[in-house]
Length: 157
Image 1 (cartoon, helix red, strand yellow):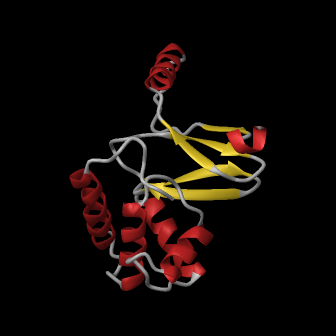
Image 2 (tube, rainbow, N blue to C red):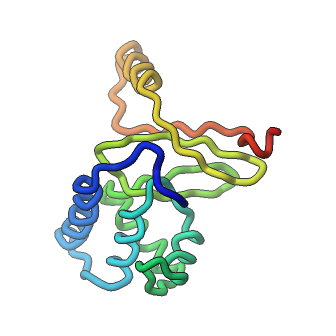
C-alpha cells in the first residue's frame, strides 16, 4: 500500500503507537516483540489490512519485519480491538480488515467485489448526514464505518 493521498500528521501518527503500547501495558498485557511489530506496522499504514496481509508484511520486510504467527496476530488484534485502538472493517464475504483507530483522519472504505481492492475515502457531507440522522432519530452514534461495495475503475472498465 502506498502513501495516503490525504497525508497524515506525523506527530499524530506517532501518538497512536505510544497510546496503543501504553493502553496494552495498562490492561496488563506484557510488552513483547510481536505486539511491538504489529503496532509498528499498523502505525505506518494509512488504511486497513487483512490478517493475512499483516502476517505477510511482518514476515516480508519493509524495515518492520519480525515473523509473527497468524494466531498471535488475531490475538493481538482482538486485544487492540477490545481497547478500541483498532477498528475492524467488515469488507464482506466473511472477510475483515484492521486499522489503527485514530482520532483524526476518519475515513470510510469502498470495496471492489471483483478484485478485492479497498479504497479509503473521506466525505465531510457524509459525516454531517450521519450526525443529522442521529439527531433526527434521537440516537447517540458511538462509532461508525461506511463500506461501499461495487467495482473499481479497472474492473468496471
